[in-house]
Length: 106
Ligand SMILES: [Mg+2]
Image (cartoon, rainbow, N blue to C red; front, side, top):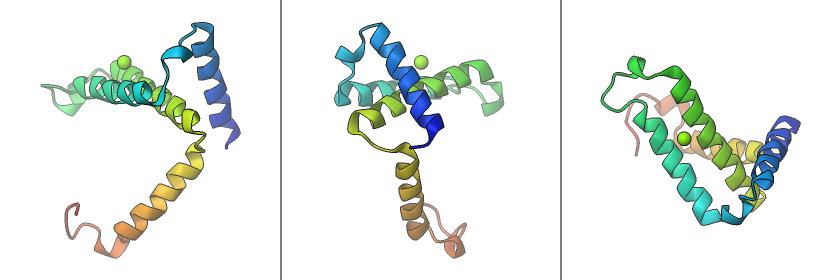
């Protein structure tokens, strides 16, 4: 795992531990929290054009999403960098460059 991601993970876990919130952070509730925070990110744009959303609020909600994603990955012992690189490889095989722009998602 990259030192930056490891450091972020430890910082988030310390924040959680200091508040005794680990008791609530099972995989199911972390997944729900991640989804709810993604909805809060969506809410920043609700009934607005994309440029009307408040950037500070967007940053806050994106940070919440990332924090829960990091906690979720940690719960399963996933290496985030490895996970993303593996998924990019799968996506590259599924969506070859030479076919890009010729059809919408399958
Ligand atoms: Mg939030």
